[in-house]
Amino acid sequence: MEKFECSMCGKCCRELKGFKLSDERQKEIFLKERDDMIKNTPLYTFQKPEDEGMALYEWEVTRLKDIASAKGFDLKIKPRYGMLSNMGTVIVVTWMLDYDICPFLENNKCSIYKNRPLICQAFPFYKTIYDAIKTDKKLKSLEIGPLSCPKRIEMKELSGTTMMFGQWKKTMYEVYGETFIGSSKSDFIKVFDEELIEELVRRGHIDLRKLDTQTFLRKYENRSISMYQFAVRKNIISQKDVDDLPIEVEKFGDITRENAISFDASKAPKDGSISNTNQ
Ligand code: SF4
Ligand code: SF4
Image (tube, rainbow, N blue to C red; front, side):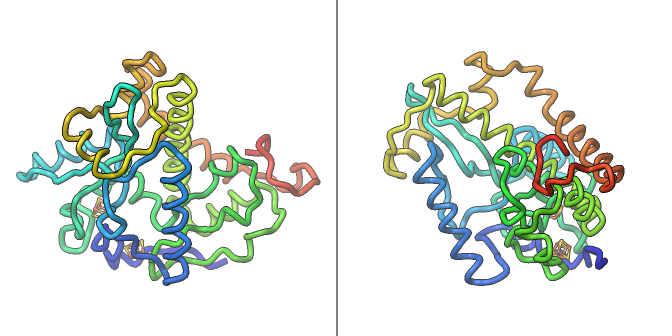
């Protein structure tokens, strides 16, 4: 089976903004998904599509700023997605690097490889397994994302099949190796955030009216807080939960890797569907 091998062309590190997708049709689908998300969830976007960059999570922002500072520069970070609390405070959900070319790219190599963000570890995956665990979708929706990478391997033979989830993970690991593990870690945190947003809404902390973007941005200038800190203040999660998140993300990656390696198709249930119990 063909294996994914990053050629280290650096393309993904030089095209951080504006959804550089594999083709125009993919771009159309991706932008529609983005529009639907903004319309149908409490989320607002801080950026126009052409200015939107890769997502950074809260602990990554602090870590990258520290690394940049040790290298002698101030890192430019901007908010990416946010919500509005019922008290009028803007809650920042994700952040982004405010660059087209990543400032950590040196001689066409990542100078912070061991500390690179989750999105970089997952590239060119967009969303993969955890999304399925949550929604119990068929593999059709689990294709590798539309992000543009010259070495990307189409996994069409796996789409829409009824392959066992465990078998699917094994195959993805065989083809994509640690990049697939990176994608599972990235999905873990996406689902964590989605569940946190649902809980904040359920407890009535979020203003579900949709303001126009300019009003939302003005409110951001007045008062803002990051989502995890807001959730800690509301006693939904503890500061320890927040501090432990990077550790939990790594653990999830380890579990995914071990499961993919040890999956035994001969012991799998015979119904052939993706199953939450066969992780
Ligand atoms: S992941 Fe793809 S785009 Fe990025 S450096 Fe490797 S081959 Fe190039
Ligand atoms: S952090 Fe490293 S891998 Fe990620 S975009 Fe920057 S140079 Fe590329």
